[in-house]
Length: 113
Image 1 (tube, rainbow, N blue to C red):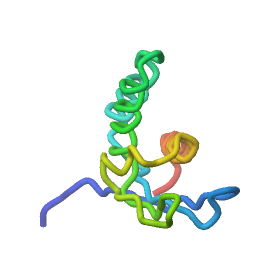
Image 2: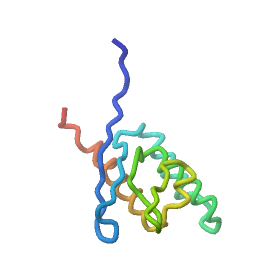
Image 3: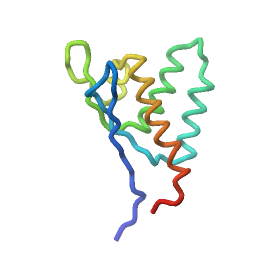
């Protein structure tokens, strides 16, 4: 039997203006890679929006696995790097915040089996 690291995914339901929207995200990414991507976002040149967005997209690609996001016309936003560019900044921020909060709880849950 081949052993593989399980990829743990949770569904995150949004609320407020985005009630009914959700994304699915990985809650057990490799810790060092996760930290590297967080640091890259924080170290990005804040005066260069393209650099900041590129680092955010790198982080989202690692965490998110699917979503039901749509544009202003109700058309599905593709779940790929091109689609990331269509997600409004507030929704992008909510997505990263929810995923990050879930991931940062995991190391504290050592008592779980």
